[in-house]
Amino acid sequence: MSSANLHSTQALQELKAALHQFSAETKASLDQVQAEMRRSEAWLADRLTNWQRECRQREDAVRQASTMLARCQASRDRDRPVDCSRYQDALRLTQAQLREATAELQNVQRWRSQVQQAAQQVELEMRRLIGLLEHDLPKGNALLEGMLGALAGYAAGSVAAPGLGASQAAPIPVSEVENIIPHSSGTPDLADLSFQDAHGHNLTMRIYPSSDQYYLRIFNRAIHSDLPESASTGDAGYANFHFERDSNRVRLQDILVPPSYRKSGIGNDLLEKVETISYQLGVLEIYGDAPDDEITRAWYARRGYNFRHDGRELYKTLHW
Image (tube, rainbow, N blue to C red; front, side):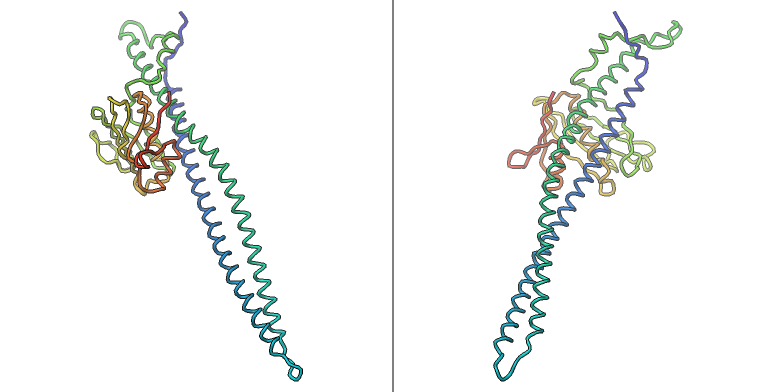
């Protein structure tokens, strides 16, 4: 039987770290793109309102100038000629100003339409990419973690005892390598995860399990040189969820990132870890109470979550 000489998991560890960094940086970039799109659309909407108001005001000015000219012309008689040139000049000026405002309004309307069409195309492509990041990457990450755990377990059980002449783990048969890539390991990887967020903070995510309850905490290593041994509120963010064995679901209880750590990908990291552990547990669905504010609801929607029960509950089906 052929064997694969797998003596180190360094390459898989590096791949796992690279996938995590790619996911975090891409999600942060997507959030920035969406924020910029919203700012552009808001600016164009403001310009549209402004030029609509200007057109109305300048239409009023044209009507007023036209009325003044008409009155001047009506006051003429044969014996007393009246000079109405200044009213004619005023009318021409207001008409020119109205044409200018109308052209600006049409310009804004044209650009707003083009931007909205482009935004729809960008949004479509972003949803596809988000689907990859939120579905395929967590699933692949779960498989990688399961494989790393199985490899570590195999190597630990295969190393010869000291003094027997063996200096490294025995080769793993190819057939056994194939068997250690399951859809779900049933046992989640609870190892600490150290990473750097988009703001340059050196962080560590630690998971505190308690039966089927899981507490995810992210700590800033500049503040915590030694991480707490029991669950406490993470200074850089936290998430709580419960594995419901009877229904084979995960209930997402909350995710919170302090304001000073937001827009750095930490929320994505927490949600991604919840999904990774859910894949490892083999659950069918993640669900929880839907947030009230529209910004947070949109954040979940971009990551593949839907809403039910009149919008009161969010959920995401995990596909295997």
